[in-house]
Image (cartoon, rainbow, N blue to C red; front, side, top):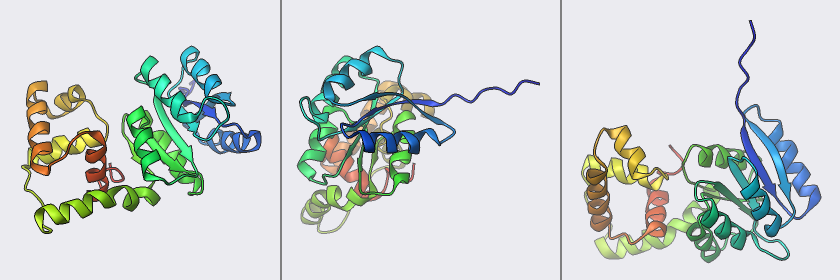
Amino acid sequence: MELQKTTRLRVLLVEDHETVRQGLRLLIDREPDLEVVGEARNGAEAIERGLSEELDVVVMDLSMPGVSGLVATRRLKELRPTLAIVSLTRHADQTFLEELLRAGASAYVLKQSPHSELLRAIRAVASGRQYIDPALTHHLAAPFASRERKRTGGASPTLSDRETEVLRFVAQGHSNKEIAARLELSNKTIEVHKANAMRKLGLAGRIELLQYALHVGWLHDA
């Protein structure tokens, strides 16, 4: 009897240093569910390959000559919104991280972190979730935690169980349609629960929602 071939996630590697790129290829290709199907040396090549090939995930270095990883990420998401992008960098700067998230990156991983973090990030974004390197969790969540202490004196606003459930799914990267199907509710009901939860928590936009999600541990226990 012929065994069914396991489908592997198709990954595009974008890294200007060949030695690093080949090391990442070896790391990814040894995983039974992952496969590098293309490489790019800079942002311009990444945009070209990202639009012309069948891909599941792009692993994008940020510091490259010419078109940067940030610009390439923003352009790819404009042209191919469903493409999942993992940002890979040595920079832990919060402003830079927020810019990448606004550009549409689904994950942010530090090069100096264990290799397992990159693999977790690839699998997370391929399943529609977001992933932030745990080494950055405190760094990114700190402004929210500080603001929350000042605003509430340490007490957290109370969300209903349904509001918490919906907001958690939203923070993890699921669409309203996906959440509605999972919870057997209408899209309108999901929108109402999301809006109410965001209002109660005083959250304005995706970045603050991610800060809150990191603060309460929603992104690493999905």
